[in-house]
Structures are given as C-alpha cells and as structure tokens.
Image (cartoon, rainbow over all chains, first blue to last red; front, side, top):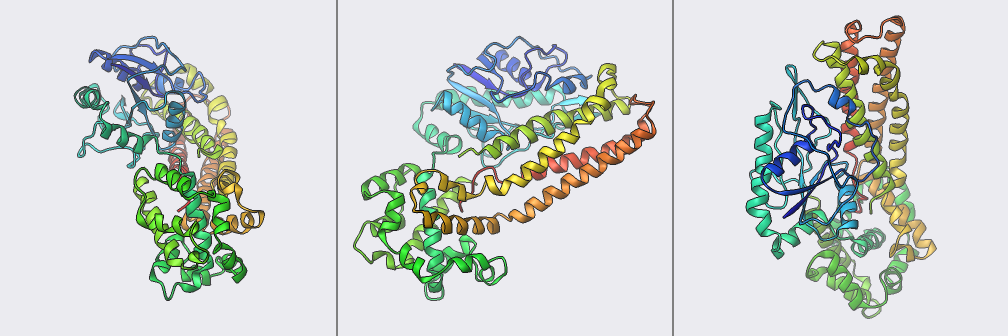
Length: 324
Length: 175
C-alpha cells in the first residue's frame, strides 16, 4: 500500500535534530512499514518558510529525516494523508482531486508538537474543523483527529502518529474498497459541485421573496422566508429597504412563469432531475420533485408558493447537513 | 467554487501570517527571554522580518475589503446555470440574494471586527517601532528584553487577527 503524505510542514532540507512535523510523520509511517511518498503541498511556498521555525527549536525530536522525493508532484497512491487546516482544506482537496480524482484521502490536524525550553512551541495554524475532522470518541477510517499535544514531546507525538498508523492499517487498508467508505469519503472530501441545487436555491429565494405577501396564510412560506433571512423585522428595517424596493407585482408574475425557471435550469424535466439527484447525492426528496414537476407542468402550477417553500426547506436541510 | 479570495486568504493567513510571521515573532520572543540562541536570525529580525508587517497589514486590509465583493453568492450569476438568466433578473435577483447573504452572514460585523483587529495590530506595531527608535543602537534581543511585553502584545493581536480572518466563510454561502 503506497501512502502519499501531503503536508506543508515537510522540509526537504531538515536536519535530523530539527525535524518538522511532516518529516516526523513520514519517518513514523515508514517505521510502520508503509511505503510512503512525501509531497509538499502544491501552492506557492517560499524556500525559507520554516527557517524561523527550525531556528527556534532547541529541543530535538530525533525521528530521523530523509530527503524527500517527489517534491511538488503528486503520484498515484492508494491513500493520501493530508494535513488539513481550515484555511487550506478546500485548496488541498481541489488540487488533489484535480490530479488524482477519486483517490481516498485522510485528513489530519492537531496541536503544537514541539517543546522549547519550558514552553510549547505552538503553531497557530492548527485549528480543527469539525466538519472534516472526526474526534477520537467517534473513530473513523476516513478521517483522523490528531489530538492536541500539550507536552509536545516525542511520547505524545508517537501516540498521535501511532493512532494514525493503527487506524490506517487496521481499518483504512481493508475499508478502502468498500462502497460505504468511498461514498462517505466523497461526501466529506470531494463534495460534488452543487451548481443546479445552488441555482435552485437562488431562484427559490427570488420567487419566495416576491410571494412574501402570502407568509401570513402559509406557514411553510413564512418558515422558508425566515430561513432566507427575510424576516418581518428585516423587511421593516432600514437595511431591508432595498429588498422592499425590489419586490413588486410585475416581478411576482415573472417568477411565476415556467420560462423564468427553465431559462436557467434547462427545458427538460428529466435532465434537471438527473442533475439535481447527482448533486444531491441520492434520491431527490418528494418536495423537490414536486417543484421541478411544477416548473415543467401545466401553466399556473407555479402559482402556489408552498411548493417552492417546501422544496427550498428540503434543499436547505441538505446543505446544512453537509456543512456540519 | 474555490474563489480567488479564498486562495488569497490562504496565502496571507496560513502561509504568511501563521506559518511565517507569527513563528518568527515567537522565535524573537524566545530569543528575548534567553530561551534560545540564534545570532543570524537575531541580527536580521528587526530590519528584515519584523517590518514585513507593513506590507502584511496592507494585504490584510485588502483581503477584508474584497470579501463582500468576492464571496457574495451574486457571483454565481457569472457561472452557468445562473448566467443564463435574463439581464433584468440578473440585476434584481443578484442584488436580492446579495442583501440577504449580507444579513445572514453578518458581513458588516465580520468586516468591522477584522478591521478593528488590523488597526489594533497596527497600533501595537507602531508602538514597538516608536520604542525601537529610542533604542536605535541596540538591536540584540536580550538588550531589548524590556520590549518583550510589547512584542507579546503584538503577537496576541496578530493571533487574534488570524482567528478573525479564519472565521470568515470558506465557501460562497447560498443559504
């Protein structure tokens, strides 16, 4: 099993006694008898990026350091371990996917790893993101939570990387071919584009804003408008003045025509449903199907704002579950 | 959609501020406290490293200023399928979803908080530069030990700025 280690703390020129974390993880993976290809991440980096870090590390973590082949190249591997941070996760994922699509990745992140005299040398970068990182209390084979290391010594560090190795060996290797893993992995890391779902959300917002006068009689419409941010308080406030000005009967008639939706979403119901299902990641909820049916149905079917409101809420629920 | 703004944020916040500049400030504070020794770094810190804040601060301001333009969902109208909307819809609907997004995402508050964080760090930086002018002959870390509280304050403000910028949404939020 070939593991690609992608970490911005890899340092090709590091001396053994001043080894950045990426090198240390590489050394420990190799100690666990994995074949490892190390890759520094692909975005532009200065040559001296670790100069200050390395210069300030008097306490050695001697896990060995080797020259790193494959610098700035991503070869095909069976599994990628990717150091993630909130700033970088989307960029990493985008770049890796562009080059080696559908290859599993394990994200890891953690806390300060190095000890200077009497105090931890703690990098500020290591902020965890809950939506990608899985905590230890919920072990998983697709993502690793590298716990914060408070002492920053080799023992802590070894525990952290051992957990990564154990996880990789006992679960990932066997699980990589499982459909459940791949679908879950893709849900987390290769979130599909949501162009049509997004467009549907935007159109629904415009449509519902024009039908805001029905909120008192249709609680579904009121709920959707509130979720959009179009609360009665906002509409009545100074900040909502522009939104008020955009609302008129002419536009209400316009958004109630099928052609207004079809111009954006295409002229075939089957094609739209197929695209939406793909982006949704499974069977479309009935509420969304009801809306698409109305868009391509008989004239006048779009007159009922409840259909759009319920569909909007269903897509919103999906979007929110993805961003958790 | 990975926006240019997000790339810029990564380059500024992760690459430069957190992984270069703050690490250098940490190292300097360690030097001031006598915890480590590195004469080469010590010699060039004030003249070459510390002053990078002046350009970094400008980048931070530009980043914050551009957030509303670059991360608004109205940019979706530049791409298919929404780009197929008629011209009139593009105008009013883009404006509508932009206003709703600003409200939902508390854009004004985020931007204001980030500006304050930048200004606070600028002020701390200026105080240190003022103190350094009084000690023009002295550039060694230990002899500037009395400025350690000022550097520590500046460091905390920079960390605060990094967190503030990190808290901005990492994707174009439609809902």
